Image (cartoon, rainbow, N blue to C red; front, side, top):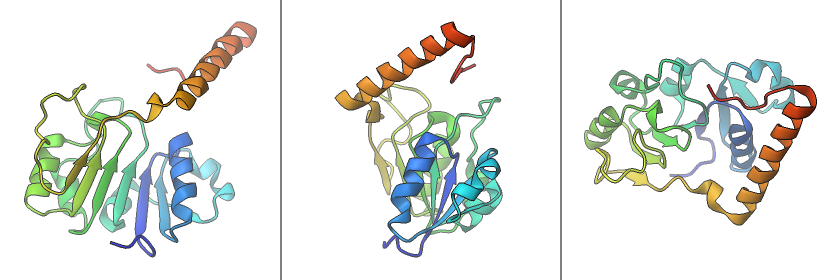
Length: 177
C-alpha cells in the first residue's frame, strides 16, 4: 500500500503526535487530527485539518493513536467503531493499551472488517498472554521506544527540569492523575 494520497487521522496531538505529523508530511498524505487543544495551535499547522473523532474513524485510511486514556478508562474503539471504518483501514496504537478493545480488534481482523493493525501497547503489560497473539494482519511489538540511551538522557533532563520548576515556582508539569 502506498502512503501518498492516503488519509491519516491522528488521535491526540501532543509531542509524539506533532512529531508523527512532521514525518508524515514527507509522504504527501492528507493529515487530520482529533484533539481538543489542536484548535489553539492550528495556525502553526496549515497542512493539517481538524476532524471529529467519528469523522476520522469513518474517513481515514490509517488511524494512529497518540493520546491518553479517557478518564472513564473505557476503550475509544470497540466493535461499533471498527465496523464503521473502511475495510481497508489500518489502526496503529503506540499510546495506551486500553484505547482499543482487544477482543473486538481481534474479531475485526479475523473477519476482515479492517485491513490491519500495529500495536505496541496492551491492556495488561507485560503482555505474556493476550487475545491478540496469533491474530492475522496484526503486527505486535514491545513498547520500548524510550529504551535508547538518548531517550533515557532526555527523560532524565525532563524530570530534573520538572522538579526544578516545582521548587522554584510551585508549578507542576505533566501531572498524571
